[in-house]
Amino acid sequence: MSDTLIITEIYASIQGESSYAGLPCTFVRLTGCPLRCRWCDTTYGFYGGTETSLSDILSSVKKLGVSLVELTGGEPLAQKNCPSLAKALIDEGHKVLIETGGSEDVSSLDPNVHIIMDIKCPGSQMHEKNRWENLNHLKPTDEIKMVLADRADFEWAMLKIKEHRLTERFKVLLSPAFGLLKPKDLAEWIVAEKLDVRLNLQQHKYIWHPRAKGV
Image 1: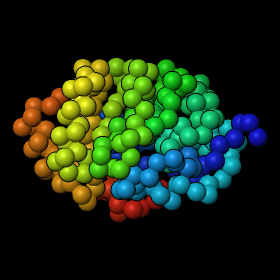
Image 2: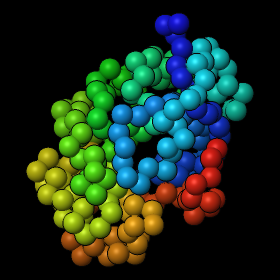
Image 3: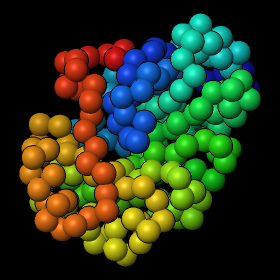
Image 4: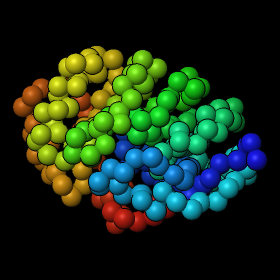
């Protein structure tokens, strides 16, 4: 059907990342992802899922009663009907966030969608998949996220921030890869280099088990 998407799960929790961290949020996890980042924590979303009509997705979100909604994955933009879902949620009065891995085109998203776009660092082993032209379609209020595994990733991130003037154009989040880079180390590097970025911790992994689903 033309108005369906493959959904892994829909649930309400606390937003764990971004400038919206700590707020109640409904998560709509779309199935599938073309990337294979070595620290991915949602590999269960690569396959399976349930084909679900747009109207049923909207109904499920409405029943949860949380106005902030994030579309995530997997890679939500790997499904062609994702922009239509985002627009439908906006039309129903929701604030819509989308977390995208940065390898898919973001230009078809409604301008009211708040984009949180990953730029993959070398430590992810997916950095050659970055779609740099997406930067031309982001708004100043959108967010760039980089997940770092080590000091080499940090040095690479600083180069890309300077090359693309990222902190002048967008909000920039630097995240330590959970279990690989200590938050304390990244915090100290950010302060030492006087970077105008936000340290971005995955709050849900400190509240619940790092591999817990539905949170």
